[in-house]
Image: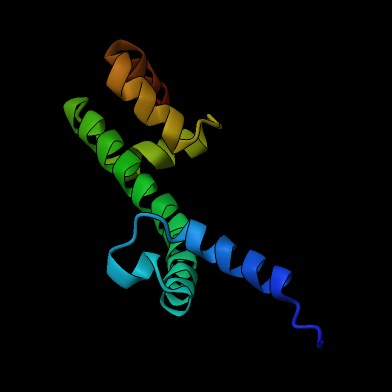
Length: 115
C-alpha cells in the first residue's frame, strides 16, 4: 500500500471549507472554489485594513472641520495654530472632544488661534 498523506490533505481542505462557511453555492462546498474565494478574501481584508485607516482619518478631519467652522476658524488655520502652540492632540481625540464637549473644543480653538 502506498502512502497518500490523506489526513494532511483532509485537514487542509477542512481548513479552507471552514473559512468559506457562509459563502454562496459552490463557494462553500467545493474545495477548489472555496480556496480561491478565501484567498481572494484575505487579499481584500489586507487592503481594507489600510483603507479603513484612511477613511476614518478623513471622517475625523470632516468632523473637526465642521466644529472649526462653528467656531469661526478654518481647519487648516486651526491645525497650524495647534502646531504653533505646541498642543499635541491627535485628530481622533480632537473629533471626540468636538462631538462630545463643544465648550472644551472652543477653548482649544482659542488657544490655537491666540498664537
